[in-house]
Image 1: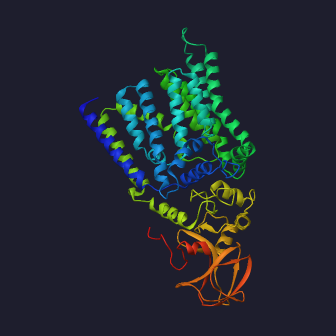
Image 2: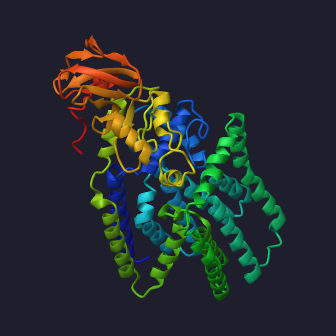
Image 3: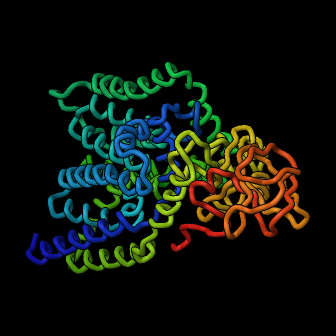
Length: 521
């Protein structure tokens, strides 16, 4: 490593550290982060994942992070705090990347690989977020380190934990099997006489692999939630594939892409380093299998193989005629792309924090709140399904019923997230008609019509308010003197005009449709 490269690497590392610090506090919260954290909160509240609240992800990530959430308690900036464990997982991935790259190349390539990975926009941004994919990627890459060191039981244990974190481990395991088969068939690498036999190593790998999934199965069976786990993780996700008409394209292309992978494996079978060859085939096989068979693909799905890409790119750069200049150009382009995709690092976290402020003021523990996916974290939702893309698609195809209105009424839920396109049409119409805007959230109520009539959909305690405060008049034939229990149906108000009937606790807690709060961001 030359002095020029050393200075370049140090400068890049400093820039990456500064950008990550800025992004930690300013990069917007993804709705997936909120959904994951809501599920994690369920464990701290005595609820059981899948049985008491919906989730279509494997459970290990939520189980492991629940103790930290319980320790922190209810706070509006909770997502900033829960990003902290992601820094630990981020560091683990960087360590494993360096370790593998140094083994198959050298220290110079390893340092370059880590720095390229850190500033690669999809990795930089997704590794920051509170999501199960980060634990999944960390478990996978450390499992690869264990495999390279012939720690087969540990590798199996880590792969099993990865499966209990994300079902996308299945294509990863398939990729490992493909790479192993290709390595054995095309290279015929002799087995060292002093090493354990492949059969013994395979048994150790399998034993480690089944332990964590078996423990998870035992846990959910004991909690009476096994059927729900199967439904959420397999039946629900399988139903979604029925709504994806373009899936045939990836499946039709799979023989071609897989054939291209095998051709490349044959073409480069004489690669000097067998480990390098194995990792390249494994990474390529994962991409091919995922593209051919997975129903929904996003950048986070490639987190486990991004370290491999960084290693190979770094090696190519270091072999170039002017490695330092090439590396600098790639880094500058990465930072420019990162600046764009991170919205110039403008502060986009305040929106969610202010909504959480309102949610914690407007509701109390034990009171329900209807939101899209669990954005308000600490309140149970009356509608079972998270209104993410999969659910909304299944509702639109009549594979899931939109019972949002019935569930809100049945559970007497009086607070809802603000209006937006993620609500299903029928539920959206119900909320728009029977809830009034308070800022970031809504509460049950209705603007009183010109003829004095209004309708209550969710029975409960209500007040009549105007811009000046509580109104004066006659409600249902008796003088209005304050909050009153109102049943569902039509009611009559005779008194001050331009009034609104509002869920009484919302008014007592400082909220009014005439003085909206938390709209300064």
